[in-house]
Image 1 (cartoon, protein in one colour):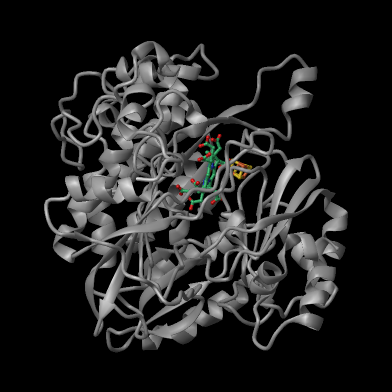
Image 2: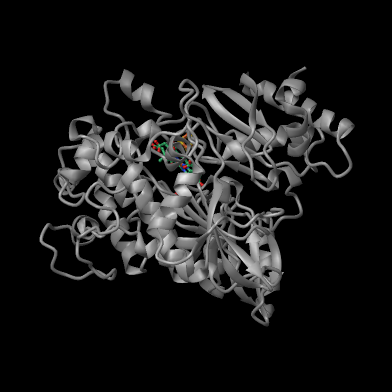
Amino acid sequence: MSQQYKNPEEVRATTGIDAPLDKKIHVEHLKLNSNGLRGNVLEEMTDPNLPAVSEDSYNLMKHFGMYQQDNRDVRNERKRAGLDKDFSFMIRAKIAGGVATPEQYLTLDDIATKHTSGSIRLTTRQTVQFHGVGKFKLQDVCRDMNERLLTSYGACGDVVRNVMACPVVDIDREHPGREVFIELAREISFRTLPRTNAFYDIFINGEKDNSDAPKFQLRDESEDLYGKTYMPRKFKIGVTIPEDNCVDIFTQDLGLVAILEKGKVRGYNIMVGGGLGHSHSNKETYPRAGEAVAFVGPDDIISAVDAVITIQRDYGDRTNRKHARLKYLLDDVGPEWFHEEIVRRVKGKVSPAVPVASWGVNDHLGWHEQVQSGLHYVGIFIENGRIIDGATPMKTNLRRIVEKFRPQVRLTAQQNIILANIPTQHVKEISAILADTGLSTGNGHLSTLRRQEIACVALPTCGLALAEAERALPSLIGKLEELGYGNERISIRMSGCPNSCSRAPMAELGLIGCGPGKYNIYTGGDYEGTRTNKLFKERVVFEEVPAIIGSLIDRWRAERQSGEAFGDFCHRLGVDTLKG
Ligand code: SRM
Ligand code: SF4
């Protein structure tokens, strides 16, 4: 093994699961002593005298898909008036592969109307979030979801997050390898749900002694996969094929890439070490694209998933949260050791990863005939995933369609929505409602540039935002359209801070907030999402961003090689040349 890497057993003993307790950070102690993530959550959540829960309860509640937040638009004003922060919760559902029944969608819509600030927010991991949920409404939201076999359990916290998979793999005519993905995503999702019944005790039954069995079957609390301290950090899994990287597989802690032979899954490349969060001021943190370290056959895929999860569980850093993602472990111990450790843990045969010649990507917008005869699906553009009644009755009309025609609802990693299983006779009527509502299926008033946009939530709810994103990117695209760049196919993503929830480090043009109204501009990622971009300009004020992007696009238009995409051009020249 190469000299540059650390000794894995030393890593395990000094910073991993076997590190001395006094070296481990507070959250590790909290999880260990929480009685299966219960802590004081129930008491604090139901205490009428507490406007918010304590830091410890908040950290435990993340495992139940809940984030304590405050409205940052009014934070200063309230402070001046001597008032508490305007506290509320964000609650996130977990929907493996983004596939929901019409009844589940209607429940989500009801929840948004009854218990939240009013919108359904589609996320970059194919699920939904609600904002502005009061402390005393959390149980109602959880119970309403539970009635429809939906849950927020495990959507956040130090566990496996929503498992991603191409949302049309089983219905699209052109899509190869349709037989497995969504089922595999579901299986992994179920398998990696924490086993503690805390969530049901606190949020469904609302009492400590759990007597009524909720719809999710209760399990024994042994946590045989995670152990008592769960994962060192969040853990993200996606499933895809090289032909359609719509789930941004290079950004996952663990990516399963199905390798097809004559349309059948021959096996999976195991990609590890993707992750994008970093901090502007800490050079020890960085975005990283995942890499393939092994290949296993279809019968061994679950064993391989367990292997990678347990490697990170055992060796991941529990002494420094900023160094706790799998990407840092991989860089510390090296891909060769990682491969060997997978071999040791998997029960079946493990081979070197299979080379992948090329990658493609599809956003699944527009009308498509399904492989199931007489049925159609339609991908609808939802700007930055925000479903809300505003200038148009978008939320109401989507509900009308789902109520009347009962399509299956599928969510994309680009924060868009797909309605599926629509019989031919309903296509015209649904198209008319969408058009009346100003909802684009990828054509009409939607420019090619806007079609590629992704922005994270950022202000006013995100406590970590340094700058606007969701509320800023639409107008930036508008400016670029005015300047004549609307027809370009360039992936453009904005994040309010370097945590990079819009996956901006993989975009051809990435914008990352670094202070109020200021952004770093990155370029050189590729449209297919296989490499990270590089810093091009720092701390640019928002108003100056369009001109800078415009001059880059002009240069690409003038100097590109035949068929060369924008990101590939910027990558070939390099940021130093582009700056010159
Ligand atoms: Fe994220 C934290 C929103 C996808 C990396 N993310 C947050 C929090 C919870 C802020 C917080 O910790 O207080 C944000 C809530 C904002 C709000 O008001 O709603 C937040 N992340 C989101 C969502 C909703 C963005 C969106 O606009 O869709 C996405 C929800 C996904 C889901 O359904 O599970 C979301 N976050 C991502 C992604 C993209 C992905 O997973 O495909 C990333 C980059 C990939 C990665 O994980 O490396 C991402 N979020 C982070 C990080 C940085 C993690 C790190 O390794 O450093 C944080 C901060 C943290 O964990 O400490 C974070
Ligand atoms: Fe918040 Fe930063 Fe994530 Fe945007 S990228 S949602 S600002 S944590």
